[in-house]
Amino acid sequence: MSAKFRLSVMMFLQYAIWGAWAPVLSDYLINKLGFSGAQVGAIYSLLPLATILSPFIGGQLADRYFPTQKVIAFLQLFGGGLLIYTSTVTHYPTLMGLMLFYSLLYAPTLALTNSIAFINLENSEKEFGIIRVWGTIGWIVAGLSLAGWRYLGEALPSFTYRGDTLLLAGLFSLIMGIFSFKLPHTPPQKDAPKPWAFLEAVKMLRDKNFLIFIIISFVVATELQFYYVLTAPYLTSKVIGVSSSAVSGVMVIAQIAEIFVMALLLPYFLPRYGIKKTMVIGVLAWPIRYIIFVIAYPAWLVIASLALHGFCYVFFFTAAFIYVDEVAPRDIRASAQSLIAIVVLGLGNFLGSLFSGWIQTVFTTEAGTNWRGVFSIPAVLTILCALAFVAFFREKKKLELT
Image (cartoon, one colour):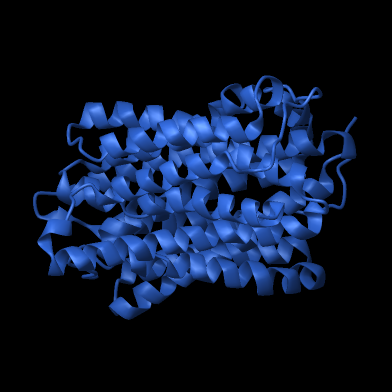
């Protein structure tokens, strides 16, 4: 097998694991186990928290002591077994503790799979995008596989399993762990970065324009979690009426749109209209989607609005990472990427998970959840972000730091 093929399979499995549980776990926890929104938000906050800590875990092990492929294999095998066991747990404190442990195992592999790909590709700038897109395909396949499993369970009850979303993720993780031993051998690097290297880029915040960009990116990241944490239970509620069997398959519309926008639209918009206009389109897509969620009619429009995820995520967050790479001084580009990752993928998603879960609890009574009220909050906040971004953000080619 060629290195590119093995790396493509790696990305497919890496994101199939995540895609098997992240989109629909909240529906399982709320509607099957009876957890509150605040409890669900706390569980979803664990992976972003682990992302902040991951440089101290797998990253340093792979950078300094062990081959990267063996670190990935160990983390995925251990994590897969843990997920399978977690699929049998219904007690909130126990499930919370297990998911924290699992998140600490999985989070480092997100960076390590990128790292092993960059190291083993001859031309990473041209080839990485093709490799990475298989991760999105893996997410889609996981969602469709879960939907197929649930439809089979309706016909053959013996195939029904209450914790199927976690069990499927665990099985993907075990396959990933075994396959990782076949990845290109990648020994520890002598010039490994320090786990706190991103602090070198903090001085970029002295630039008012970049500070505004970081603040808005942080707020938008918190509102992203309303989509990840609450869309599945919203779709399966009486308001929309998607069945639990179909919801994972319906939600892959977002990832299909993501591939389309990433492959065709982003390369067209960026060179012609620049970072700011591209990101404005991205940030405006957020309130449009949430306003449709608030209106909640007709159901087909709500489902179709999932495709806006492609614009929301790619036009804003992907463009944001490109912007950081463009404006950061050459000698701290890696540190600048670490900074934006900590702010957005770490702190933003962590607090956003807690916030979205708390909002769901606030709008839930004995009669059920007021989903229009829930999604009115991110709709208003993302509108404010869009206005602030247009008013205050000024695109620059390079920051001048003194």
